[in-house]
Length: 176
Image (cartoon, rainbow, N blue to C red; front, top):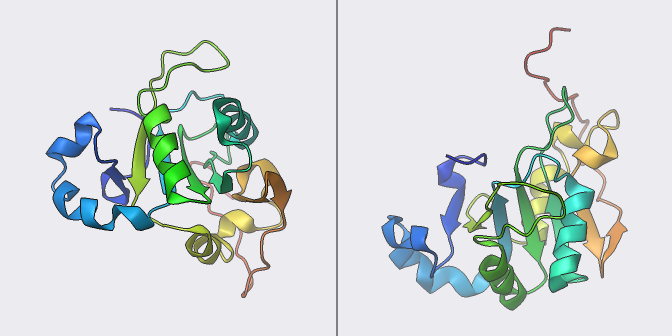
């Protein structure tokens, strides 16, 4: 069992070994052409957002994605082991699925083998902006490295302002 989002937040991509047993795989094939968001699961613990962006670029995806989020434990600063990446086109997202499902060529020694899935949690840049712009993770006291990032042609771009006051994130395991 790898580290990652709850099972109901992802669908394996068609063609992966895990898609054959997924109950939604048949209906999923019909909607696939609209998908651009991929979940990369079982990333090495050192893979924070900047390290993942570098890995994506190294694998030929420079300027091909416009959103990256690697959840981070706000107490320890450790990466979660999974990430959401939105690609600018479905074709590039599909290529990323093919490259990263089973990927193990990390920049640092690791036994982790990546699993790549279509996200059912959120699809498309606009959906991610709406999901996160009012999220506590965007609070000004949260370090930038812990926040989702939007990119415009490979360069970080400002995240749209929240539409309501942001609460501080709840930190598990820590008393205030």
